[in-house]
Image 1 (cartoon, rainbow, N blue to C red):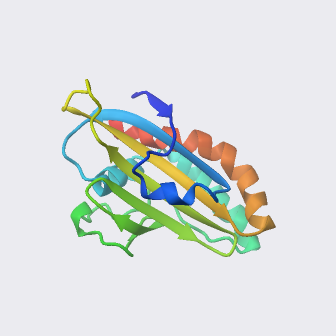
Image 2 (cartoon, rainbow, N blue to C red):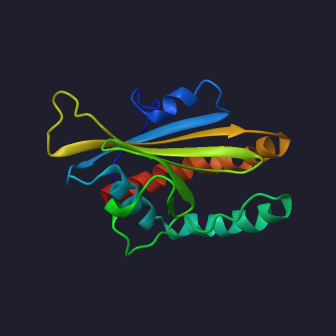
Image 3 (cartoon, helix red, strand yellow):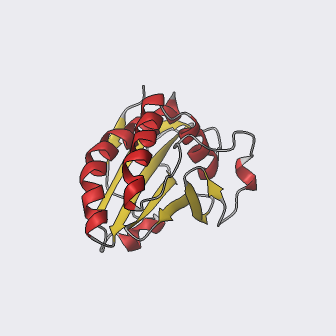
Length: 175
């Protein structure tokens, strides 16, 4: 399995402007062969390879939070497997998230409710000196803003789980 490293949210990420007021943020990077895939294609590949235990945790999460008015998001892997990455546009849903921005270098997706806002970025980083052009570094970053006490309570359970789920998910890109 590829080595995943914890890192700062990349400097060029669209999420940078949201960091100052974030309740939570993190970012993980992995190097993988550069097959020319767009950030959207990489995101779809990443979530389509979600480990079963993560989707199990999502089902549990959905049952536990429903009585508190927090959305049932479905499964992280719940994307349209037949849909081509190039057909997605800003505003479309891609699994549990809606696309907020889409470029050649980054896709930002997210979801909001009255308790919190979540944004996730998948960004292809510019090649570093000495890094083979056959390899690319991909960063998956998350920024969360909470709106109330229920959002903060929710994050008490989600934060430790996220710190396991996010790197496990991005590692699957290199599998």
